[in-house]
Length: 586
Ligand SMILES: Cc1cc2nc3c(=O)[nH]c(=O)nc-3n(C[C@H](O)[C@H](O)[C@H](O)COP(=O)(O)OP(=O)(O)OC[C@H]3O[C@@H](n4cnc5c(N)ncnc54)[C@H](O)[C@@H]3O)c2cc1C
Image (cartoon, rainbow, N blue to C red; front, side, top):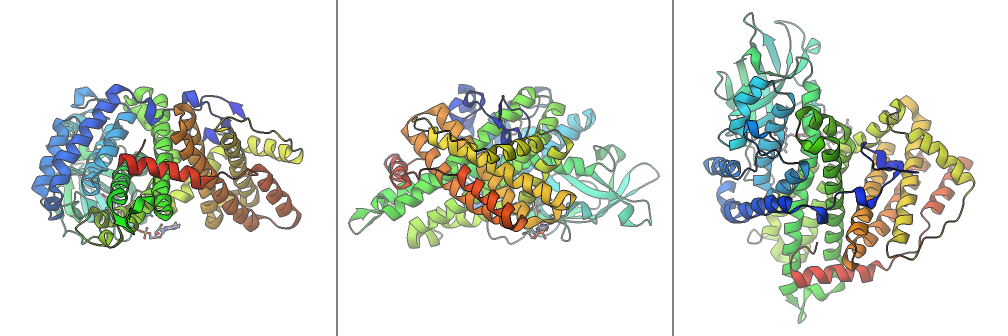
């Protein structure tokens, strides 16, 4: 493996990364912390106390809260000052996302405004479109929404049926019904995707295109609020377009290039969703710790029971890993986008780190689901009733695995994008896989040092090689047919996700030092190695047989041969820190 400061998406798979080059939560500037605290205070003091009203669908209140976010500068962290924004870097946007994630319903409203309305305008809007709409969206006077999905096209978004028929004066008549539109009940501006088709022409010939559609345009209306499992304080409705007349200047980007708008917006949306899951999880973990410390059974706080301590520690470790990946990715995007301030540079950086965004989306949504689930369990019967927040948080979290591209779709994308970059030659995966084959034929024993994270570092190096082995074998076995092998692709994704997470925790803990950081990293890496071994074995058995399978599984065992860690003791340390401090301990 070569050592560089990786600035290419996915490059960490074949390179050794220097801990000094990685952004971690511990390395944030005072300016970052200040904006994070501002956002957190706003959510704690102004949003959470009125959650009941939001859940009763008081959309005037939701509008007011978005306007307050505008006053505080929270809506324009990605937007240049000339357009009303505050032009901060992605690490700052991430901190705001984490803070807003403390209230899932409001985070969804906020996310649609900033991630799904501001981002496409910023990256694809013409100068006049930006001047017309961005200041209102950034001040919160105007509410934005994003209308891609339809009843028949969710994951397969490009098969949308909404049509846009060009008119002699250059305008378009839009017709169709969009579904699941966040902020649908009260948004003023919708980014709508439809196919441009000549009058009477077949939809199949249509060019998928994004439009800026104002609610005030004739023919635009919203359907009824959906009755959802959770997120009751966020509006979700259909958007109905009945020959809605949209002027020519409201085409966003180019005709026929709507997919570029849709997919790039999703890249950033996934990163922001991960920030919100992370911030939400930190709040839930603090509640779990506080509850376990005060709730007594058998004369003792339940936090003193090993079975409960183990749950508290697992919550911490999973969140620790997600944070490590998040800040690392924010640092990569900011590094590639020159501080994240120019829209073309940001667009290129978001595309570059699309693999990391998908990894974050899957890992963070599954992390928060595990955290809210165990929080209900720690609360016992109190976790199942409305009087405690655990029940609502459990319902609210579930959708994160569904929107911004389902986790199945994101899992397929992760190895798919890596394989594409390998074939194109932009990532040296094929050469690295070949080098690995030679290395496995002549194994050398290289004992780890005796530093607290040396053994973990060796495991991470082994895990990276396993990921290369699985991906390389899959590419060799299936060639151009790889996309059809979903069972193998999803297993490869699980390995790759664990590799990025394990390496990120290692780099974070190495940079931060100290027993608690080391405990979190060692537990995560120990458990990830076991998961990777099991999943990789399964994938290799699906692809190879006989001598080849025997050789590869022997290599797998050798790469992941580690001394087991006393995770029981390390988990106790982590759980004790949470129960004592009653806040997430990092
Ligand atoms: C609360 C909420 C808010 C939302 N907000 C918005 C919004 O603001 N704007 C917007 O445009 N949309 C929004 N959505 C829609 C959301 O993006 C879609 O629900 C999501 O993309 C999944 O699409 P679907 O519901 O049609 O499921 P489907 O695509 O029908 O998927 C069903 C299942 O099949 C799996 N599947 C589908 N295709 C494949 C495949 N090729 N390979 C393997 N598995 C596959 C999926 O992973 C899933 O498990 C929202 C949804 C919800 C619930």
